[in-house]
Length: 225
Image (cartoon, rainbow, N blue to C red):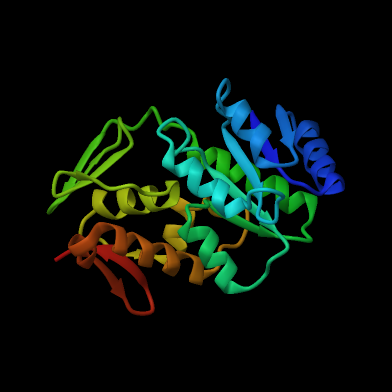
């Protein structure tokens, strides 16, 4: 199930038609009030969220989603006409898992949607459910990160990035490898700057333990002393 929150009727109908034609169940809303009402009974697998909305803007809705225990882990793709890097940073910092700028092509829209759903699907085949590095602990069975025994709230991509690095301490991951593991690889092109921004916010959320995420110049990142 995919929820769309978009006030532009033509765009909302286009997104709905494209997703339904690809086999997805879709419920669309023009603003946040009916959207949150629907969340009381059904939790979607993905939310496609516009920024410019009546009554409550998309960033406010996104922050509220991440403040509620039952909705904080829902992956969110922001779809907006805003194109500046600052707007993208605000969206990512607020917890968005992807950012698509209008106007966009239907094929790219569907590719990003499918990739985000794949990345957020539970990986039941994984058996190493507990990872520890220094004061960072990851309980993958509960999708829980603690730092110095205190819960650390991360977005989906931040969580996957931290898990990737901590599962192989001192191993250097190139940006291409990070793109493949965290963003799903060849479905679409992820800007190097996007990875850097996620590393920056992850370091901030980890506090002093953020120092263990090392930048390897011209290569990528690792977790190490």
